[in-house]
Image (cartoon, rainbow, N blue to C red; front, side, top):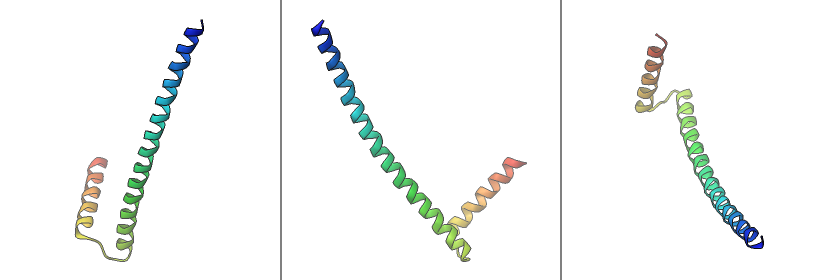
Length: 76
């Protein structure tokens, strides 16, 4: 009986350690995703601000026209 309980305690301890490691990995992934999201939003804000000011990179303008064209095709 005691040996079985010790085995169960060891199993639970191993599971706990594994879950703690997984939690740390997921937290790190969340940090990376949040930073990427923040960076992407910053780029979009910059492009929108420049467009509002009347200046836009040719590449951005071309990409917006492409997106607009794709949306029109999806509607038709």
